Length: 71
Image (cartoon, rainbow, N blue to C red; front, side, top):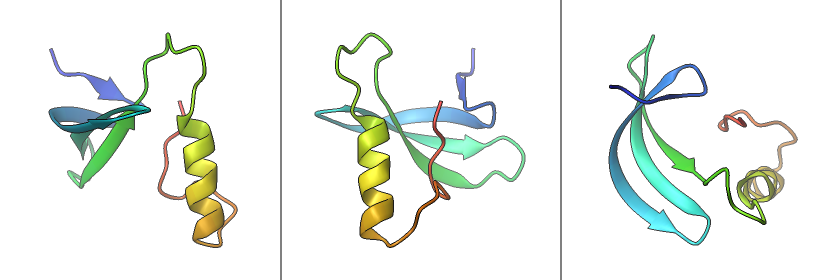
């Protein structure tokens, strides 16, 4: 069974992991664009990915989540 996240990305193989989650290759189901997706367990007591996404946007001078899918 294919795992789809954000309603549009089909997860592929795991390519890494870190303190805040696991990183997978993923393919957009309409455009077939290949991206990396970082997933954090929904059971974590102190979620960090939203803060990480906000920090990356601040560092690149943006105020939107253009390259992030927040679930």
